[in-house]
Amino acid sequence: MKLLFGISCLGSFLLLGIANAIPSNLPSVQVVKSQLGGIPVVCHLQEINREPEKLTNLLDSYLAAKEYNLALQLVEKSTSSEFKVSALNQIASSYLEVKQKDKAILLLAKALQIAKSLDGYSTKVKALLNTGHNLIAVGRKNQAITAFSLGVQEVQIWQKAPTVPPIPGSTADREDGEAKYAIFLTQFAAGYTAAGKSDQAVKVLAQSLRLSQTLTDKQEQVNLLVDLSIQYDAAGQAKKAQELFTQSLEITENFGDENNQASVLLTIAIKLSQAKQTNKLAVVIERLLEISQNTKSDLQVFYARYLIKLWLTVDRSDQAIIIANNIKDTFTRTRLLNIIADYYLKANQRQKSLAILNQIYTLTQTIEDTSKRDYALVFISPDYAKAGKIDQVLQVIAKIEDTNRRSFAWTSVIQELSNAKKFDQVLQLLPHIEENVVGTALSAIAIKYATEGKFQQALELVNTIDNEFDQTKALVAIANHYLKLEQLKLAFEIAQLITNVKDKSEILEAIARSYDESGEYPKAKQVAQAIPNTTQRNLLIKLLTCASSSPRKY
Image 1 (cartoon, rainbow, N blue to C red):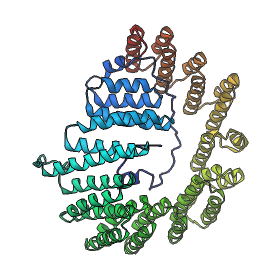
Image 2 (cartoon, rainbow, N blue to C red; image 1 turned 180 degrees about the horizontal axis):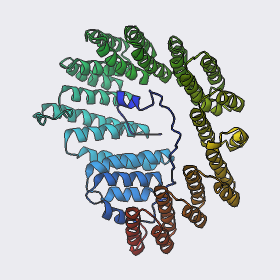
Image 3 (cartoon, one colour; image 1 turned 90 degrees about the vertical axis):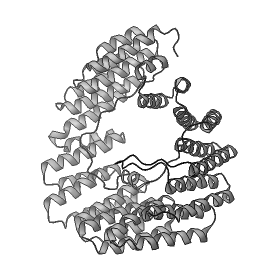
Image 4 (cartoon, rainbow, N blue to C red; image 1 turned 120 degrees about the vertical axis):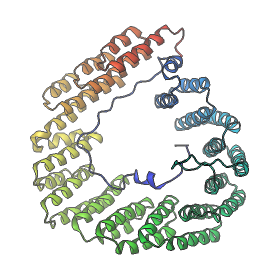
């Protein structure tokens, strides 16, 4: 369970993949990060002095490696109270994920104490808000309420403080102003509701509502009214929630230009979908569909893609299908239906996904443009593979006319099957695969042999791969496998065969750190000396030297 409380926004929704980009045929090579316990915190701090962002990166590395003692030492040695609060929240979150709730509770209590004494209104308010929500996650509602109450008080003090004029020419948001105060108050109200204090939430919402009525920026006002509507609804005030929702739509209607209206309505729809307020979402989507009918065809597609994603976030695939099927252009319709097929696959609704995929396949036969038809087939190939329909994979790829697109489809299918560890199906497809994609398939099978402990067979297969990228991918994966098993000698032998400087440097660093982890400093340094990247090699050797001369491990 992730504890950190986040604020939703249009940008974050876009990052969820609303535009369904073409999958890459060059998957990145990832190296297993070894644990960091062999290098004392003091050694790392020597390297990251006066570089706070690296401090945060180091904390993330410790938490990823479950090195909680080192993470706590980092907090202890930091001179930044703001970092301490943030780090304690992160460590508590990580503890909760591994079912160590008692430790999480202790850290959050400490974070709350530090948050109370932070300087800077914005810094203090954010820390109290975050810590409060995290305290709810560990069942400490009373402490959470304390955090929220302190936060509300701080916002009220902030409102009375002299305002700081923005820097001339700056486009950055001001840290003060009615909108900022109102947003924080609304978020604290959400916290009160989550803690079971709806009566207190309503009081704070009333403060935020008064501020909302003073806003001159109408888009800010609409966004705030929607947030208030959602929180009033959560607090059991349905009538007030509906009133504010209606008010937000009335203001939006007065924006004049429909494109401006649509932009604001999309933001409203995202907020409603994330709050699972389906009925209100339907009202907004209906208006967006009306606007889309008055726009150019490319904008209609843009809106349709957005609205399909929105319906799927509230599990209304039936409505998403209606929107997709109303698009006249056949190729575009296949792309939109593909989004829905992917949704069903992720939801483990295989039969529904197959029904959509079959519909798409039928539609592709009516697309006259060869290029578009090929791409439509390329996109459904990996989905059929994901659904376990190998016969359909062969049927679909056989219909792709362009050689490069056909190779792209094969690469996507192999990547999908490899990610799912369905190596037997890769073997099943091997006789049918295009010659220029065979290396990708062989790489997947070599990884399979390595995971089964067939070291020689894996190496022999890797040696038959001509493509450097595929060979590197296989070697890194095999080295990672032995690294996980702590068979460091074998991992080192494999790493030596890698020709790509970046990948070789990363895997050798991981091996060196693993040797250091077990206290074998001479071997760690020996491996580090083999790192081809000079900067990476010198930094690691410096850290290892510090570690080896340290009187204690931690």
